[in-house]
Image (tube, rainbow, N blue to C red; front, side, top):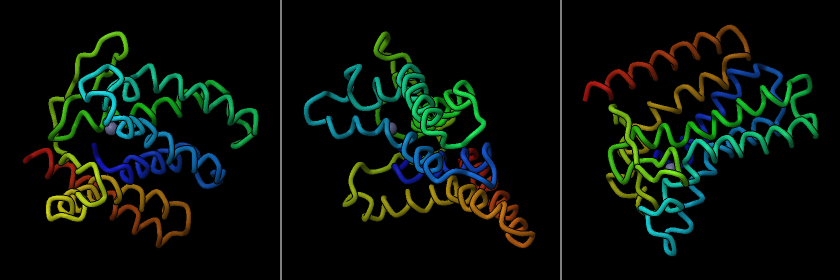
Length: 196
Ligand SMILES: [Zn+2]
C-alpha cells in the first residue's frame, strides 16, 4: 500500500477538486476517511491469510466494496445535508470512486500481493502494468527505518504536492501560483517514477 496518509491525501485532493471552495468540513473528513477504510483489513491479518478473498487487499479493496461504501456514505450525506444541492447519485459516484482509488493505487505499488478487484466472487490478484509507487511498511516502526523514510519521501512528491495545491487553490492569486508550481512538481515526480 501507499501509507494510509497518502490514501487520505488523495481523497482530500479529490474533494477539493470536485466540490470547490465551499467544501463542507464533514464532507472533507469523509473524503479523507473513505480511501483509508479499505486498509482496515490489515487489522485482521493475524486471523485471515493475506491471500484469502477477505484477506489483505481482498474484499475491502474490491469494486463492490467501493460501490457499497459509496452508496452508504451518500445516503448519510444527503440525509444530513453535508454539501447542500448535490444529488445522492453524484455523491455515491464520488464516494465510490475515492474508495476505489485505494485499490487502484495499491495495484501500482512495487510489492505485496495484487488487489482482488472482483472479490469476493473472484480472488484473482491484479497489479497495473505500471508500478511506480514503492510499497509501504505496514507499521509505524517500519516507517521509521531508512526504507520507510524513502517511501515517505517518494509519496510526498507523488501525492502530497497535489493535496497541498488543492488546499491552496481557492485562497488568493499568490497561493494559486504556488499551487500550480506544486502540481507541476507532482507531475514531474510521476514522470520520473514511471521512468524508473
Ligand atoms: Zn491497501
